[in-house]
Each structure stands twice: as structure tokens, then as C-alpha cells.
Length: 150
Image (cartoon, rainbow, N blue to C red):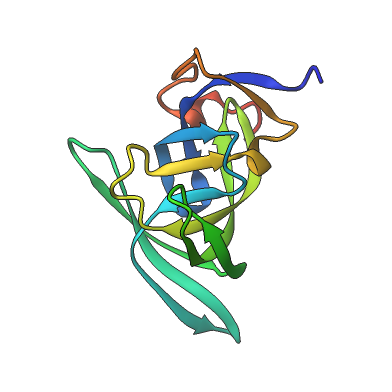
């Protein structure tokens, strides 16, 4: 598995399809799915398909709000860290981390009381990245600048 890159338990990544160039994320091998903190989530119909409209706030000191739209992938129950099950919408979007661009299924939820707006779960990490809990922020502040390919 020479292609596996070792990262820290927290890193910065980009979600370029959503217009997000840098976002702090917790890399969590204990969580199956990936989660993104969103505000003002609403569903609507476009061309016979369900779409989602939401906002993402990045940065604590000088928050920047990004308005996003994405087609809904599906909706299913997700168990949170407290053992409660909630129905969540999922989207599929590209992520950029450690110079790699890959597709990830992300559920949209309220993470305002969490330290990181994004949680990257083991399904997204598997086969791509290993996580060393002794490491932290091993990658550049601006993930898109480290891209191997455009």
C-alpha cells in the first residue's frame, strides 16, 4: 500500500465543487461516514431531482460564509457520538487533501458545538490515507496549492 499517505488526526482540506478552499477537518477512523456542518439547509426540486441549498461557515475569528447547492444523493439515519440516530441528507462532492482529489459522500448536519466543521470518516480515508494520532496539520494551509494534477 505504497500509495497510502499518513496524515494527522486533524488536517485542512478543500471542497472545490462547493467553493470551499480551506476547511479544518477531524480525520476520524471511528466514524463510518463524513459530516459537514451546514446552516440553513433546505431541499428543493430542480429538473425532477431533489437538490439541497445550504451555507457553510469557515473560520472562527473571521468567519466566511459560502452559499452552496448540490444534488441530494440520498437520506438515511446516522448515529451520532451520543448514540442518537437522526435522518441526514447526503451529497457527493470532491475533496482535496494531501495533493489528492477524490470523491466523498458527506452528510449535512449541525456541528456548531463541535471543534471541527468537517469530520472525514473511514469510508473516505480507506485505501488513501492512514491516520497517526500523534500528528496534526501535516499538510499546507491551502490544500488546492498542493494538488498533483489540476
